[in-house]
Structures are given as structure tokens and as C-alpha cells.
Amino acid sequence: MNEVAAVGSETSVFTMFLHASIVVKLVMIGLLSASVWCWAIIINKTLLIRRARAAMEEFETVFWSGNSLEDLYQSLAARPTMATASLFVAAMREWKRSFQNAAASYVGLQSRIEKVLDVSIAREIEKLEANLLVLATVASAGPFIGLFGTVWGIMTSFRSIAASKNTSLAVVAPGIAEALFATAIGLFAAIPALIAYNKLSGDVAKTQAKMEAFADEFSAILSRQIDQHTSRGA
Image 1 (tube, rainbow, N blue to C red):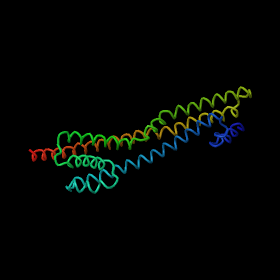
Image 2: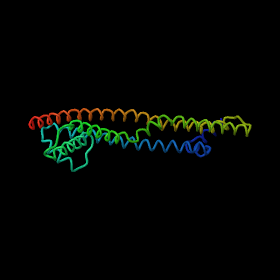
Image 3: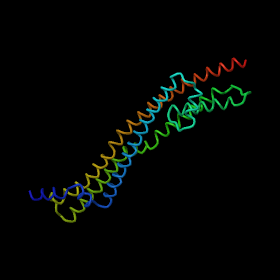
Image 4: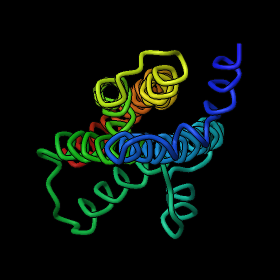
């Protein structure tokens, strides 16, 4: 009974960290740092995606309200934009460049606008996906790093047992608890990272699909405009 009580008094979280070997301590500190980094990324990306969705809804409400494309472009070109608004500004900028010269040809304009839209989508998605691979890396590597700390800690415990020639619970349990604590921290870092990576990746994919749908619709609108200008010129 006394041995069990002694084990309980020596296996608090802070005590396990202090008594762990230097290798296990480094593993624990690294995993905790990775967990903090992951949570910072999760919060930042969640807020960024929410802002992007809100901006998309606000822009599309104005866009489909029937206002002049020129007036909408003038109001957006002077300030930072994101998501579908950024696609609109980029496409309209290419459109206006093509009409700056009175003798401009419409040949290839539709293709150029589509390329501009594709590049704009890629840039917006790159912003949303930035650092998501960190979550994937921590989710996949965290448990193995924690397991490494556990294995190292158990090896240290066995060496202590061999040196003391004592296999009582009071000798074995603290070292094994310290070792398993490294695995627990690895799971603590990996599980939220995995869940967040899957959730945020799905949100980014949905956002990309919405931007691609808008790009197709806006490209069709400009295509009709090009046909009208071409028929007038003919």
C-alpha cells in the first residue's frame, strides 16, 4: 500500500516531466510546441475561411442585384478584395485593358479572361491552404514521435531496474508513466490536428467550388459581351 501511495505522489504531470530523461523532455516540449502551433493555425484558418465566405456572400448579393459591372468594378478596384470579388476585379481589369485601344481585337480575349480567372482562383486557394500541411504533418507524425519518447523512456526505466536490481512497483511505475506520458502528448497534438485538417480541407474545397462556379458564370457573361461587341464591329 505504501508503495502505491508513493507511486501516486510521484506521478503528477509536472513531476513526470521533471523526472523524464532529456530525450523524453525534448520530445514532450516539441510535441507541445507543435500542438500550440497547430491551434494557432486552426484558429487563423477558421477565421480566414469565415471571412472569405462572408465576403463571397456579400459580393454575390451585390453582383446579382443588377448593378452596372463598371460601377461595381470602380468600387472594388480601389480596396483589397478576396474570394469572388478578387476574381471579378482581375477579370474586369483584363477586360478593360483589352478595350483601352480603340482598334483592339477581341481575338483571344475570352481565353485570356479564363486564364486570369484560373490564376486568381489558384492564388486565393493558396492563401486558404497555406500551413494546412503543418496540420497533416503533425497529425501523421505526432503519434510516432510520442511513441519514440515512450520507447526511449521505457528503455531508461529498464536500465534503472537493472542498475538498482529492484523490480518493485515503486521503481517501475514512475518511469513507465513518464514514458507513456510522451505518447499521450503525441495523441493530444495529433488528434485535433487531424480533425481540423479534414474539416478545413473540406471547407477550402467547398470555397474553391463556389469560386469556380462564379468564374464560369462570369466568364459566360463576358463572353456574351464579347459577342455583342464583335457583331457591332462587323
